[in-house]
Length: 302
Image (cartoon, rainbow, N blue to C red):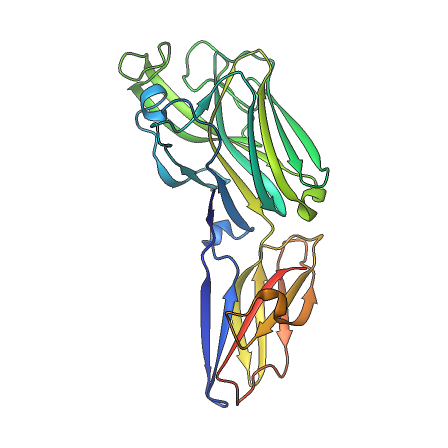
């Protein structure tokens, strides 16, 4: 499991006090992704290769969808050369991801019908349990645009990748001798119940229902992690602009003069709850000490 978590530091030289303030943002993402941090689930079972058994042109490695979700995925190949799962047998993947608000999948199907095709179940480590049903022609469709259902709802499922008039694995399961036509990979959004914000997501279970075979290419979880998006200073007062919080959570600002100290030992400065858009500001008065060479600040979920 690889996480797109990039520490970032903002340094402000305070001329009046000749000291340095360092703001440590727990997660930093491009502006389009400032709704929390993403965690890639790359350890699920894989039994086939996308570029050989689905679509030769599909990218590997870190990749961001170009739809409205703009979700990053990491497409990793295992030691036997496999990088996706395609079977009716349930796919059960154990994870441990805290405070998950949303999950995204890259999923299509073989031979889908206009009926319930798969369930996607999420379980928390303290009893949270939520299941979504994917319907053929609504939430999930054929990866090859042939005679099976080929529509999606364009709301909770959006197209993530498509190529036109190419030879793929349609009809044969091999891109070297399959049908020529249009091929797609779609992305599904699952908004989890608020109870998951207080637990660790512990397992993701994807099960076929008999009306087509689900194909799983990628899974990404979005966690309720704040992003320090801006910093302003006036004399010895510091104001932090924070984005990407969850409205039903409380966040605490911590400070320390030693960045290597465990966060549990940092001093609390303030608590805040985000507005409806997930943003909030923190004003810290009298925090800049002229005799302190460096001060460190961070924001985390309380």
